[in-house]
Image (spheres, rainbow, N blue to C red):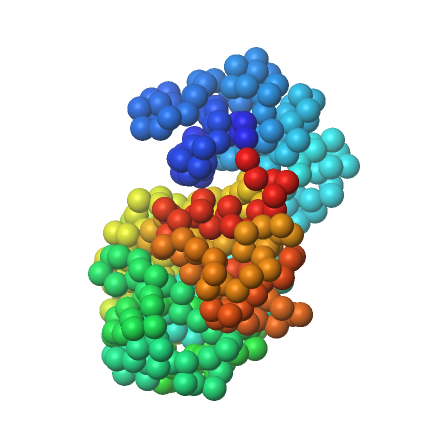
Length: 453
C-alpha cells in the first residue's frame, strides 16, 4: 500500500517505522529539517521537506498514487487541509489527528464542510478514556477496550500477597470462572513473554489479561486481596484533558482536587467545574500537596505540559501518601525510564494514537490494534474471514506462529477461551496477542483467499 504520512513527530515517525517494516511504500512530509535528517538516516522511507499544505510538496511525496494519507502534525488546521487536498487527488482513505473536542466529537461536520476526513483520531479523548478505565479497575496499570466493550484487556502488577503468586497457569484452569479470562502475556525483568501452562506467576510480574467485562469483578480478587473504592483524586495541571477528566470524575461522585500554578488557568477551571477543589500553586510544594489531602488520595494524576514536574510531583505525591500515581508523558522514549522510577502508570498519548491508526491500515478485517508501551507487542482484534486458513478446522491442526497466542473468540456475544479442539467459524471475532516478529504471520492466517497477495 502506498501511504503518505504528514508530520514526522513521535506519532508520524512511529507509524513510518512500523509501516515500512510491514512492507508498505511510505513517504513522509515534514518541514522541520532536524526531523527530516533523523528520519532519512534511520528509516527506509522517502522523506520530503516542506509545508504539508502545499500541493506541490504533496505531489513530490507521491499523493497522486497514494492509497492512504495520515495527517498527524501538531496542527488540527493543517491536518484538515491536507485531507481536503488529498480528496481532490482521489486518495481513498484519509485519517487526521484532531485535538479539538468540538471537531472530533462531530465527525459528520467535517464531511459536510468539505474536509473529507474518513477517520478522526483524538489523542486527548483516548487518554481520558484510558485514565478513567484505570481508576475504575482497582490495581490496574494498563487498560484497553475492544470494539464492542464486551472483552477487556487489563494489566496488573502482581503484589507479593496475591492469591495467584506461585501458581502455574495450568492450575488456574481449575478455577470456575476460568472460561472468562486468560493471561496472554507476562512482563518479567523488562522482557515480554507469551506464557504456557507451565509458566509460574511470580510476585512483581506484570501480567496482561483478557477478561470478559462481566467477569472482571471475579478476577480482581485474584490479584488484589483488597479492592478499595476510589474516593479521592488529585490532578496536577489545568488543560483540556484535565478539565474533561475532572468533569467525568465529578459525575462519578469522586472527590477531585486540581493543583495549577497559573492564576488564569485556575480561574478558567473554576468556571467549568462545580464540585472540584482548585488550588493555585506548584505541585512540588509539600505544603500545597498536603493541603490537597494527598495523604488520602487514591490517585495522583500528573497531566501538565511540564514533563519534569509531572515526574517529580508524582514521586513526591507517592512519598506523601498517594496510593497510586498516573504520569502523562508526550515523549515515548521517557516511558521505560518513568517505569523504572517505580511510578505506577505511564500514559503516552502518542503511542496510543499509533495503535488507533493502525487498525485502519492492517490487512484483513482488523477491528482494533492495541500497542504496548513496554515492547512492540500488540493485541489485535480481527475477523476470521471466510476462506482463511484459520477457519473450519480444529486449532490444533493449525500452525499458529511462535510468539503469539489466540486469546479469545466471541461466539454469539459470549467470550470463549479457545482450546485445541476449537473450530473457528467464518466471520467470528477473535483477539490475538502477538510479539512483533509474529504479527504479520498472525494476520495472514485470518485473511480470506481473495485478499491474499
